[in-house]
Image (cartoon, rainbow, N blue to C red; front, side):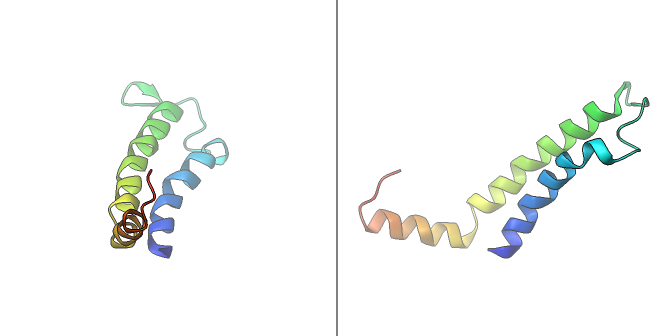
Amino acid sequence: MRRNLIILAVPVIALMATVWLPFVNSATLWFGLPSVMVWTVLWVLAITPALAALEFSGRQRVADALETKEGATR
């Protein structure tokens, strides 16, 4: 579980640190777009595989099986 939380924490911390990172929070262009925009889009896209790794981990499958066995619904 700890590994999954670390995988999820990396993009979240990167997004929260955007305002304090001087190479991102400057008046430069990356690929013709403002650097903050590119940085944010890349990390938002990185959240999707991180959440997928968390959702499809073995521990989550066990929790889902137990929940279904007990009759609880989502």
